[in-house]
Length: 129
Image (cartoon, rainbow, N blue to C red):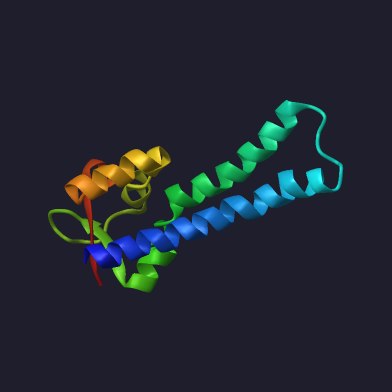
């Protein structure tokens, strides 16, 4: 199960990187290559922030579909209530992903305890479909 969950997380992180890098390319790199980079450093930082914000939103809202994230769908996993194993509300699926904004802390917590901080907060678990 841990290998399927690790694969699902890996898939989602690759998607997150693509979601970050594609807007970053068009908002920051391409204008710079064309000599149109902003003169104001704050504008450059705001463009980079927008690209990162899009990726952060994917991390938080990726489990919103009832089937879970793309990684969970591919690996045939689902998010359930930790006690009853019943499906959880959209709100709890979002709540469990907010700690992903602390990415390395969340990863280390999972490696050490085999349970994510977000799963502890939302009282959820990930199981095979």
